[in-house]
Image (cartoon, rainbow, N blue to C red; front, side, top):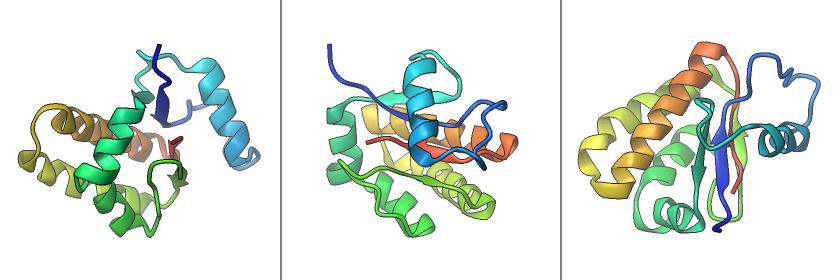
Length: 125
């Protein structure tokens, strides 16, 4: 079975102010399942695809000032930045096909969940 790497938004009862990045990501790995609406799971191949063969992570990094990449995860806190990323990914969808389009569509959903719930979005690569 391939290792899966989550992109997720914590559930409402998770208090991110009092938990470290690692405590939140550990909780996710232990509790969220593949069909959770708050998580989207990528394979190593998916991460390679969005890091090296498409501009998906470039869009996120450009807006957030992050350096998300294969082997380098992180999280996005700022609500305005989450909104900007969601909008850019939404409008960028028309440039993608196949698996890239699926990933972008799911990322837009994840950013929308983060915006609506006022939670951070985590990338565990």
